[in-house]
Image 1 (cartoon, rainbow, N blue to C red):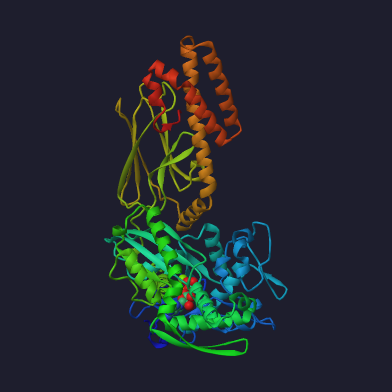
Image 2: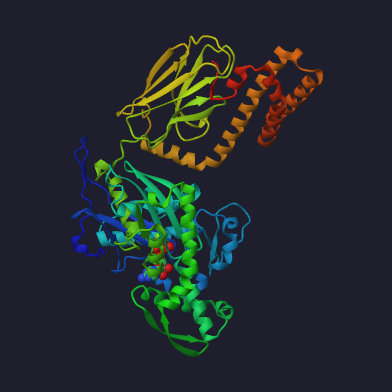
Length: 636
Ligand code: ADP
Ligand code: MG
């Protein structure tokens, strides 16, 4: 679609003047990179028409993500390396993206499917590959591909490139994202942003560029070795991932494999014997790929194969091909169903479907996706190989500040909330909320007769306030003494358009009120925001565990408090054995708390709760029931 013609490309010529010394600096070109499992591409914005365009060295935009280690020590990347898959598979590395940020344990079950040697290492460290007696990790390997793309772009644009945006699948975890970033660094690139591939693909179709627009998008990405379906909600220029699903071992390569299987069957040779001969298998696989590509625009292909010295001629039809691949496509459709379920949305809510990846050129794939999503039209006008790179270039352009209106200044980058009992963060305004914004919630006290409340305001994504940034605190005092759980404390956050936060706390029963103004953004640089976000992804699992433990402990302590109250005030109301049993259960629960054992805490809480529930009912003390519900704030 976008043909590369060097003469029409003018690089981003944004100029800045240093006021101190009057020097003029030309803004750096930022490239967008799709670092794919099978193929990689690089794109920039053509400043003559503001359209993204893929760059290439020799008219071929696609750089196969393949690295060849020649016996003489040279390293070749791309098309030059692809040829060696047949001649020298042991020294030709493909699908390195699958290894990025992963340990041997992660990929163990598929270790045999690689033609090259992956070091068996039982540790949690990143996998390594052995090549000519040297060890390489996937970050280094990916950096070779990135270096090649950078060099292509530099040659095409005739300028040096230092900055890039790199795309990754939406499901990439933090270590995979970090590894991608590091690969960029190793290739001499300052990676300004890691962007989700489905987000980039949507941007390439202009989806999300209009801030008024609110849409649900399905991005169906069938590449060479992987399938991803991502459901996005785009609102106010914010791309929210609703769900992702897919199969990291399903893709166009499987189409090639089933074609080879079909051929072997019809010729009467065992696929097992062919597979043992790695170079013959690769040869047949590449031939199958060629035939498959032709079948995207033809009904049959005349084939000529040479197996074990015998030549075979036959006609391979689209009908045979469709039969062979139906099961694989069905698998991808199952993933789409699951993605919808996980997102909790119905088919009808999907406004648009974006097709990504070379394999979405296969007519049966298009047909099945249309049928499943009940759409007459899909977004497949752009080259499905290029869309991700093109979108990455648009993102790069946004970051370069060339699309000011898209700076997304109208959202709060980090969540705002208050500290609740146990040091937990309770988010009141979630990140990416548009400003101005007003939100509030009601809280209550945890101790009888509490007359003061500390309200501490935090910003960040972590579960524990200690890991977030404190913005300020104030005290709500003069609350009339009431039993725990009785006061109704209403906390309102008002974030105005300048990013100034006003916090207002009112005790509704007595109408006691306090208010403070806090400026949340103060002193936080973009980098700090980013690193806090990254930290929240990085620690999501351990944070969740910590939060669950704190919640269990808090609940347990509340119950202990109530039970003690019950025992002290109403000992006569209970039989001696009931008192004894309660005390025993209490001590078991305290022991579980002391051991930080969440399962034991939950179990003992449940037991104590079960046992004492009838007493509480007998007492009909509504304060107890009240105190056991709602979020509580610490006493001063
Ligand atoms: P990845 O994102 O995994 O790097 P790509 O999106 O580049 O992969 O897709 C590569 C796959 O697309 C390969 O399996 C290739 O055979 C397939 N492909 C490319 N062109 C066509 C075509 N015209 N018809 C069918 N499949 C194609
Ligand atoms: Mg891809």
